Length: 628
Image (cartoon, rainbow, N blue to C red; front, side):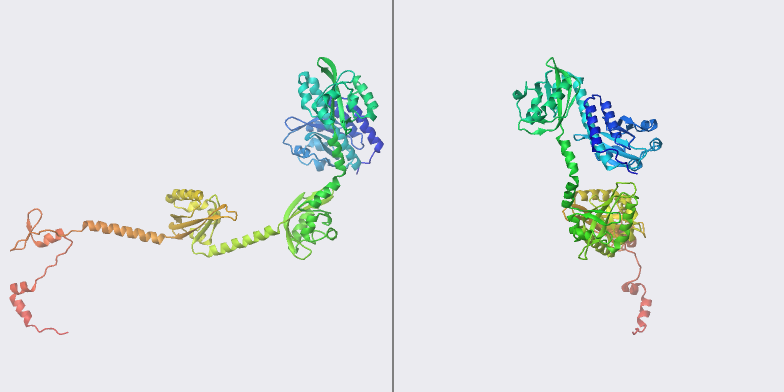
């Protein structure tokens, strides 16, 4: 149930005024934080909480607390800088929800046992730095009403000023020796007053911002730099300050040109040039006032930003209907703002994409997910479709269902068309490569193989899992692997066409010789993209070359062993015996056998036949000649 507003504007003003007075009179940080926490818990319905301060290591320390159990306090006093909640706080965005909705992870039994329902987590900034966080909660109600939220943000904003003010006061009290450095270094208005309230020294910020010279200011009462209609009020406050009854003045400063500068002033007592003095520090709160004004105009500014954003933006209700759309989205879809307001996103979705995107949207509404992104086709009013990359994000204000769903869209039609064209080109390349009778491969700029054609896989008998990347090297003959790796490294460095021969594992026999040629590839921007290469089987050629080399070697060896007869051969004129190299005489058959490759076949010539066998020769001559 919601927190009923237990106060009207007058009550809120009273709480703010009481808090301002208390803070003005409080110098101790913890006391000031307790006062702020007590004021927050006066708003109604809130019965517990604490103020955390950032530690030097980036973690959080619980400085003060009210209305929480001992076990809960012990479990939440220190939050480690690596805790995910630290990042959430540093975003600087107040959060109002149930305790379970905000604190999901890292929730211990002690924390769950506290029984907290509604929770407000309000980061506090000082300048550009997140210095603290105000946590307030209720054990009885589930929701913090909007007026209470606004009041909490206003009260929490004082923590940053308190932290900064207390730090300054502590620094001033700590060391008079550092006073001058602090005086000149801070960008606040700094005044040194004598005990009568006259200015005896000012820093450069005073002269720069107020437009006076030091000579015009020194000796003047500090009332001189306050608006004339409020000088009586300022005099009273200054008197209380001089009497030690007050340390805070909310009256603005006035410049020489009459411009008013809203400030919050604190004072502390000290010494200046050996005499008692009062140090006044006035902090310009213009930025805070502007921030409050900007907060009131945030919806108008947000609308302006949305309307001029280059991406499509829309707010959808939980049924997917368009609550709001910007000009960019309307241009993408071809609909006017009013026409879109009559539709839901499913009606504009291409029929083939409806089922999946609708189910994702429903899971978002059911809080099964917080966001999702997808690429889908939307139907334009003209009937054509456009590809959009859309992000859906649920924006929750209650634990039940989203207040609305934020849609962000980018037109990616051109990119999708290019991707489709590239995919078609790659498909055609693969078809041609797979049909080629040679082994084809592609590698990236690092030399990792990203594609092999079917001929390659059929040749090696290996799978893509085994071959892709550097896996194909396992199929290179061990004796060739080093040379292949070396030539690959050189080719990647030089980026020029290459050719090499090596042995590659074959599915049918252990190794086959291949001749590989590769050419460098470059993308559309001219950047080196790797190589495309092909291999042909040259095993038969290598075998022929080997056989030829062996034949040549055999011929050369045989030639060296050939024996020839040269020079004078000593033959006996009568018996025809031949003298050998050792001086012995032997028959001519033995000499020819030892000095040549000739084989001896014996026969009888006609003359010798007639001489030595006359009867046989005469008988042969009487036989009739054969015809035919």
